[in-house]
Length: 247
Image (cartoon, rainbow, N blue to C red; front, top):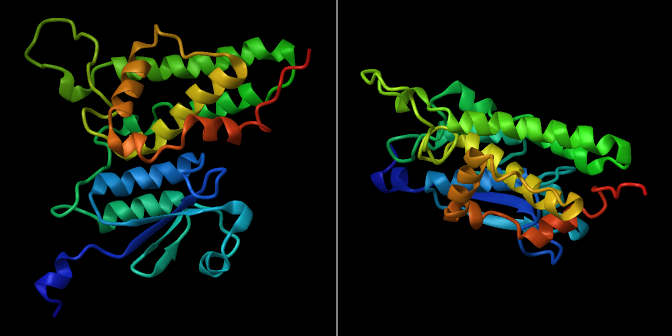
């Protein structure tokens, strides 16, 4: 039987994430940040290795052949599918020792899930005549997220109150704690904000108070800012992707 000491020990976890342009810092990769945030929020001890895609070390080729980061090793086993890794970590790093991170409300998991596709179409477009309608598509997706963030969750509604429910004041998608839903959406939303500003001079409208409240609350958290690539890295990653509009 395993001794108590062995049972108390954290599993041996190493996360491999995409490196930045200097080959060492954190690079732009919302999927890497998603797993980085999950492990940080779990409170488990883990190592992070940044992988320079231009000079991928030979031992990594052997560890996960043909795989781009992120991937991780968990007690010696290599795992490469981001969605499956998320499920696995939630299952293996469970209460009472580790917090449960799954969202309580199903809608929290799908909120904002169309924003990144709308953004990609918007920044990759080269036709000036298509710009306005693609921008409108992105705005519509952002407005939908804003409505969700400003609508009270079931637990925010006082069943005994006769008053009309006011605007939600929650910090994140599913309440005042970060969940798996946030680990998925926040890294992408931040990329949308940074890249749209740089290459399209597009700002998320200030009237989207729910989206801005959400971002500001994320920027106050170590779990977000210390797992995020620098804005310059994000801009650099989109240098060749974000197309200039033809004159």
